[in-house]
Length: 419
Image 1 (cartoon, rainbow, N blue to C red):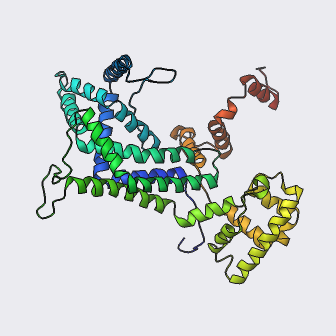
Image 2 (image 1 turned 60 degrees about the horizontal axis):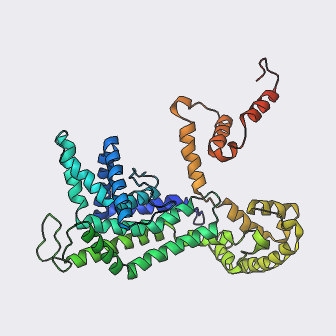
């Protein structure tokens, strides 16, 4: 990028989102402490079948009691069994599932920890359970729990969308923008609803509520002359700070140049007779490649060519059945249109060489680590490629029977044994 300013690239959408979430989790003290407590909680309960069964039984009894009292409705798909599972550091969508479950079965988790805190058979586990229970019963934990459920609830939907194999660039970027707006909306009008939900939750589960007007005490000590109220701490130092960090990191990861490039590439889409074609966005893309379009004259020539090009290809039936930009570029060469519209063809080539990594690419690299292990590190390129295709495209291979595979294998060349 330092040597060639137009050497643009776009990193994996889902990975960028994950890095943005990790950044906030590691750089904000309260959020870092919150996820540390969550991790310790999952370790102490998830490491024992006995404790997991105890949690499951306690929650089942609570659901039964709520059904009897009429607090819950019964029906197909309702009141499914809920447990807690360890989140993956590389899949931040799993963090949302974990903390949402913790919120839903909070009282049952506290009971399990209380039982463990009374058990004298394992003093180390007993002491750890008491420490975790103390953290869970704090206003700080409950506040961060609700705040992260709100934020991760927005990013979780985005994360799921960005990992789709049939990812549409235009829709993906629109969803990124929608998620940013939703997080900004929480910052603008979400403080009062959040505080209200936290207060109701604390009342329900006997968690001590801090006086919002009192001076904030972090458990270490107050600094002279720099006392802040609880309202200032939770509203400014936590609520606004976390959201601002999240928005800033999202804007950094999904920056304006990458967004323009992706939306411009989407304008070259062939679907529905080039319905997505947008002259203004394609001209914006050209301005990002000043080495290829150095003068205003070049940009004016491109604009004229684009206007003539879109009329030409929409009326040409030979371009109706194409499915990708790559096929479009090949067809232009076959029909000699790259000579008629050289600037447009250059724009197509720039779109094709722009590296855009998607979740599918990331999955391929993850699969490679599983297929080519230390014990199989001398695997040739062709065999590695074949193995990766088989591993990644499991859905396709599931539709192929073993008999079909054996017949093809048998027909490759004569063999001594008939399969």
